[in-house]
Image (cartoon, rainbow, N blue to C red; front, side, top):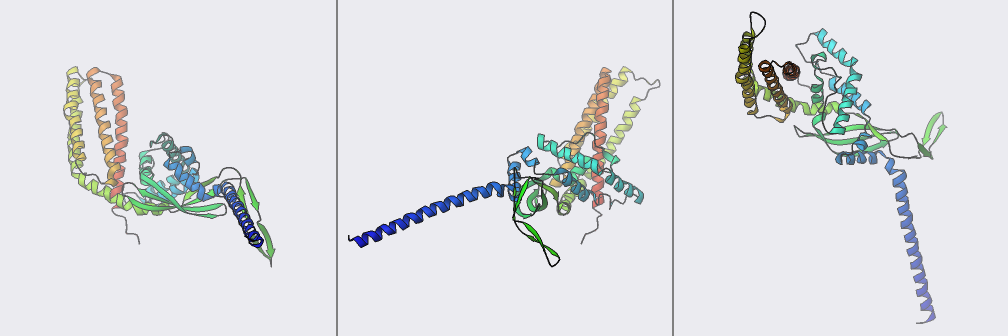
Length: 391
């Protein structure tokens, strides 16, 4: 090999090694830049925050999931969407009554939202839906708090995923894919996020005036510490209710129709039982004899309690549409509580046990609350049948 050829090969080798070193340095710089960008920028973006929230939801990381929700503002907006037409189509209410109910709901807005936050937090912490004890119930509100939760769909809505996160300064929007469990209707909830992080560093952004107008020269912002993007509202929650509720209401109405004959027939039997029970308790001196107590207890155990169970057995034999699950469960719970109340009362009669009578009274109050809830649900279903067709 001559000297010229050898020098050409060595020069080519040096250029190749120089290129390889430059390429490795480029890859290192690119990798380091990616790491720096991930740490200083991406982990502070709403996209990262929403992905983190969904992962926390899937992994049951309660505290992490909760940290992405600004519950006070979410519940306040949702409450308004939920109650906007609560009494609008109830023709059994006078204009004055409707106005009183609507105004009352405005007055108790803060209390109801605080109650909803407690319910959600208890669900996240314990996995159970429980009602706040201090909340007003039943006709004091025009609708029971538990019925309000059922109407909200929160207890049977599943999160499927997050997509389309759009960043706009200190706010952002995102789409959350959900499905209503009973109807299996899919829906996309559109949410607004806000950046609650206070420590940030702005680079490059300048504001200047030209011709009497202000212009903003864009820059880059870096947030120190953990990302603090939180959902502050569900913007199309009302649309979600309108999309799902008709299917659920139809299921409920169909189930009420399918069970109406059973309910009406047994209501007549229960009225006859009530009259017989009152007659058996009558005494000229106001004090029942031992044989009278025994006779009443036997009537309770042999007639009243079995009749409740027969009714429930017939109700259980009727197919239950998914949208009627709540009413079906209420009826089962009411039957169980009613039977327990009668059993305690019969035991009190036979044993002359005041504690058993107290238990029976407490259970009877629970029964009345459940029956009132059932009555409200059936009534609301009747109201919705007459809703006008919306364009």
